[in-house]
Image 1 (cartoon, rainbow, N blue to C red):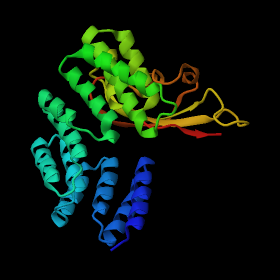
Image 2 (cartoon, one colour):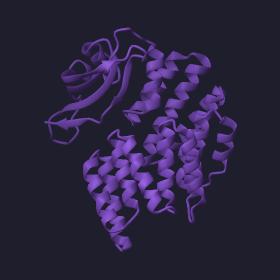
Image 3 (tube, one colour):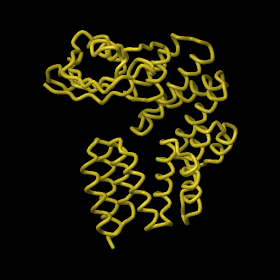
Image 4 (cartoon, rainbow, N blue to C red):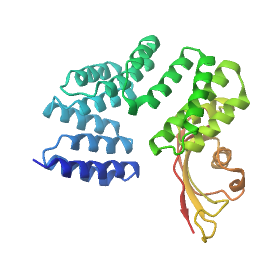
Length: 320
């Protein structure tokens, strides 16, 4: 068997590769773990497949994993997450129950994901009660954000706005915000924006909070959804476009270096590539918009039933 120190090193390497979007290299690390008969290899490979948008293969990998190592709670939990994301709610229930029954399982982590499933099913009171049982300090922020989303789903928008604003102030008063907290901060802004939009039809406050959310996480799904709701535009001619956009940044990032150019990728529903570019420009700093142009684009098909606007965007790639 592989020694624990080597396992920790391989896992850290694999998670870093996934964070950097290098899923193929992560699969290689996962296979290395499996070669050494370590069950976490199934988890790494499944996460890499999920990142590639291949949920079917990710689920198949985990099904194989739990058949071989039935007491590995992380595999059951991740399998439940994937089922939940795919709308296979009965299967998700069963997977979470299996995870909770495993020895030494992290019940707080499993119950957090279980609460997300209950919210998706509209069982809001049950989801809230379960979230209130979670005590793990490292999950506190994620639980608070989940509770904000439950308040909004319950149409308790005033509570969501008040508690969310307090949470934002609490995070921003810290000397340093950890990288993993940036996503939580983004989602908090998005939920506060949703509360203003759905509770008071306050377009300005909703837009400002969505914009702040996207400053902390460029592709936060809830913030992008809120922007599309505010714009509220559909068209029979809508298509899904993938754009690679180039532009020039508005200040020097490194001392004694010239102002860089940048490249970023957008996925947008719009009538034309030019309209898609305009949606993209609306989410970038004013100073860079005039420099933005399409390097190339793909037409991914007709989507007349979708709200127009941005659905995803990548990080920036800067270059001289």
